[in-house]
Figure 1 (cartoon, rainbow, N blue to C red):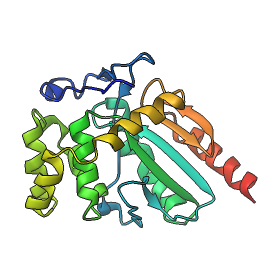
Figure 2 (spheres, rainbow, N blue to C red):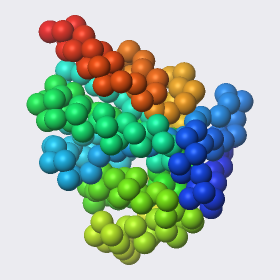
Figure 3 (cartoon, rainbow, N blue to C red):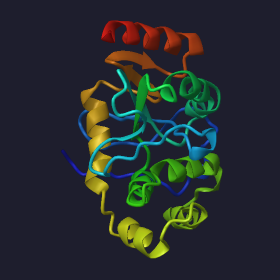
Amino acid sequence: MNKKTYILGFLALVVLVGVVWFGSQNEDGIVNQTASILGDDQGQEIIAQEVTGDLFIGSPDAPVIIIEYTSHFCSFCIDFHNERLPLLVEKYIKTGQVKLISRFISPAEVGLAVLCAQEEGKFSEMSDHIFKHVQELESADDLIVMAQAVDLNQENFNQCFNNRKYEDRVEEWFDQATQSGVEGTPTFFINGQKIVGNQPYLIFEEAINQAIEESK
């Protein structure tokens, strides 16, 4: 697959437009952009795997796995982050019933920043900070500034980020999205059941409850 290229410079202008497209330049088409990940302020258990694996929150042994394809640049995911996800955290993630895996279909620099933050176990803090301040993002240098805000080791982060250490992992997220038939974000797979978009909370609740019952 050809190496993908991404654009960061004008993101602040399109954050609230709704659906924003940043191309993955390959024969399989373009993956849509959007947003969401929790920080620590909700008080949920944060499980941080190695950066070569999936980034997730919740119990590693949860019977229900939600795979979320998301980004930091769309109003639909902003709404999910603000309205749906806190409810799911309280009812299902904190209680050990659900593990939420996040795969970021964001411009490469954003994914790199999240993965570099995970070297210190802070992918969630970094992602949440980007989410909250996405309108301030105009260049990759802004992500380096944001690393300071979440108390990352600046020297280590800069080296990781500037060397694009996890670029292959970022591209893998795009490949996984394509292989899973993801055409836009947010897209969710709840124990394999596909849900597209920021659906009403009851849709998520019904799908999770069904998955819990089927796992017994």
